[in-house]
Image (cartoon, rainbow, N blue to C red; front, side, top):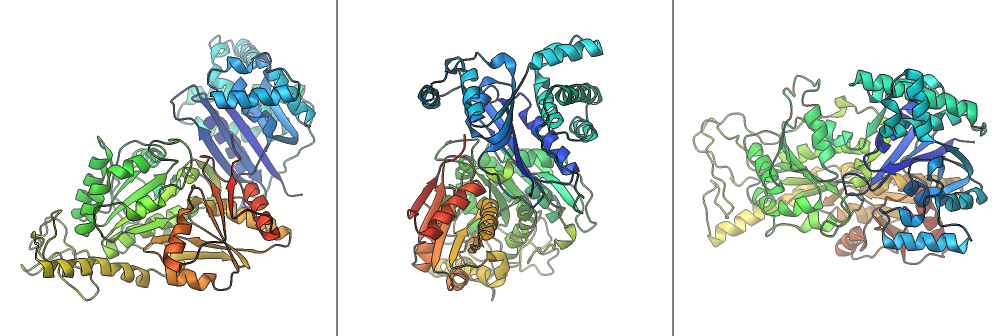
Length: 636
């Protein structure tokens, strides 16, 4: 049997849930297992429910599954929300002081959930308490283990002669993960290594947490019955990394030579800029000297304005944002379009409209990225499907911006940003930098920034070059940049800019436009972060003898319609999978190929797709029992 185990921890936002999950993930990564973890949290700073699920396997995994094998709960809400999601023969470790907490006592429940939970317990003749939901879980085959977290802290406090410890509820997270690792009989030295690693910058805190971890680990091995699970250490695959989801774009920007990034804080994009601020100087090759200057601006309008200004000096520049921030950038985006300024916007999508679900996942903004702006101007919209892809794609989108002198919108999302996963070490040697027609010197005083050329791309001067004077304006201009409303010039300039859409499709290799992962009569088409759940679901179906094709579109504007038409030629049934309500990619296919996908699988709850949801739904389609539009709803 191949190991496939999902562990989940939950508690109030700000209680250290993420730290516990990172310890658990590091432990199993050090043991040679593949990891995929996802973090879910509310949009307030503290108090509301937060949870982190980590999936562990011997084989490559790229997504989560429905259900969990082990749940660690140090508050009542975690038990109420997730106890019925623990799989048969699963395990719950919980704080025993919570048993008499009623549903009505949890003030963070919204009314809809409270009503559904109450109806469930009533229908099963259970008390509306933690004890009632645990009884229901036990009847469903779950093993229940109770422990008093405060009592553990009190014992540890006495043992270490440190009275402060008994009141440090923030250590519940370390106790919880250590209890679970003790129950799973994981080598204790792996736990110690991971705790020291997580708290490496705070030696005294690290020592205290190591003591707590070992105490809880020993408690579990002594008090809890062995559950029969055993995780053997595996040989660690060479060049494997355990990474946070935003590492790909962050490190990619450094390696690509991005030397200026501006941003205004917004979930989930802020993590990327925080990483760049913390790691302003990393070791890089001699042809990419210097560090990345990161500036937090007063708003998103300033952020894109500063990035454009930096780009005009010849510096590779970027900004990052989410949906509400992107719409504030639109006027400046149009300015970059008419002035042919290369700038990269890393667009971390979340669920809208408006503020929507500000800390939840979605692919709602594809049409916004493609169509936003005043008037018509060329841009590139490019999507990454995984953390690893995002590293290499980030290095490429800077090349695209420089070569084609257009703004590039790099589509990411909360699913990728908030994941923790194992992947192959990013290979810097695969990165090639192409600055396009960027001039380092100008010999003549007859420089014309927007001069007409055979390929439609004008040589680009840096600000400050001798003989390189040029003008920029938001108005239409002539070849030197002076304002012009001449109709003949207008046609020439529009032709010049718009012609590069065809040029982009001609020059970007087809393998960078669309990735063909597999073939089959049934063909899935998608974009972005659905890649992982789709690939995992396809592998599951392959074990059932069902072959499903998968085409992932990375270049979404300009749209590679001829290449896509060729890839669809041998497929009888097209299945569009997206995390939005309307099937926005399906609309692009209809618009460009005059063909509607045969089926849509959509999810817009703000929770990411799981491979098991897709497996079940794709199987229905193959068996002819599915609706044309299937909507997925799993997730708390």
